[in-house]
Amino acid sequence: MLHHGKACPSRFLGVDVNHRKDVGSSSERRRIIIGKTSDHHRKDVGSSSERRRVIIGKTSDHHRKYVGSSSEIRRIIINRTTDVKDPRLLRMRYFVILKRKR
Image 1 (cartoon, helix red, strand yellow):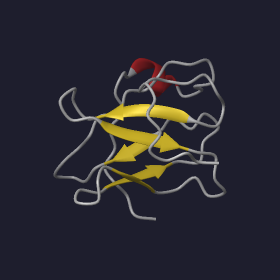
Image 2 (cartoon, rainbow, N blue to C red):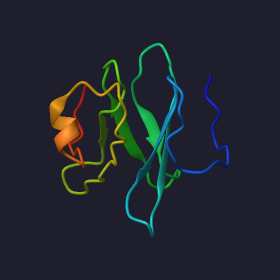
Image 3 (cartoon, rainbow, N blue to C red):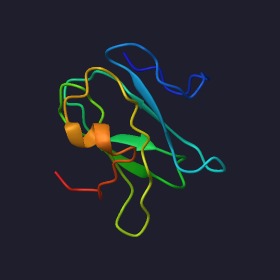
Image 4 (cartoon, rainbow, N blue to C red):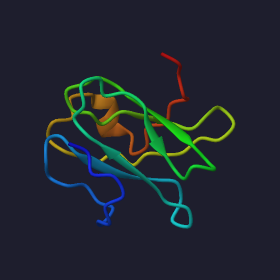
């Protein structure tokens, strides 16, 4: 299923279930590993001293990420793949949404 803490290049892997995104600036990288779990919700990003909540929307492309709070927003780079159906994602390079509660 999920392989946590695996040292791999932070780039988009051409598979259906796993997408790796870089969060933050080049000086502070946050690694998000999304696996195809049953609920597709809430992964922990960052170290134990600084947690980032990621809410993954249940879409067919699995590209919408919600990271950070209203005071600190992290930008997510959306990879342009062929399975992105939303025209808004094709226009915008960065898709930033505040953290929502379920």
